[in-house]
Amino acid sequence: MDRDEIARKLGLNIRRFRNQRLLSQESLALDAGIHPAYLGKLERGEKCPNIDTLLKICSALDIPAAKLLDFDIEAKEENSATKQRLDEAMNRLSPSKQRRVTEIVENIVNTIVEDEI
Image (cartoon, rainbow, N blue to C red):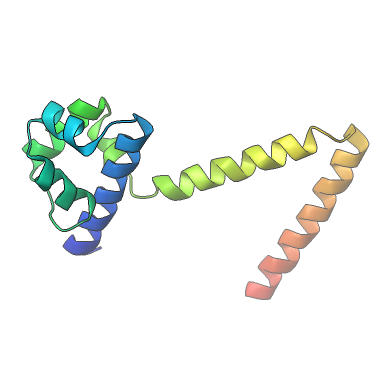
């Protein structure tokens, strides 16, 4: 992964966590002690922060640096949402119908995996 991709993914994570906490760019920048315009450049992936700035942002967001640097978080959140949708759908079925749906899904997955080989 090159520096530009790191900057882009880091910027997406900063924005994601800022939005989850319902913070404006200005309020996060103030809390982190950085200029709002610089935070905007970080979120757009135009700049890559040094470690001190990264830690200030993490502190202002109240998250560990590892969480901000987890570039697979979007896929994990999407996977979690998908599992939740499946759980909700399955909970509407009787146990015997749940087993039948599980068998159908397993067959579909096996077919897809075999096609990829």
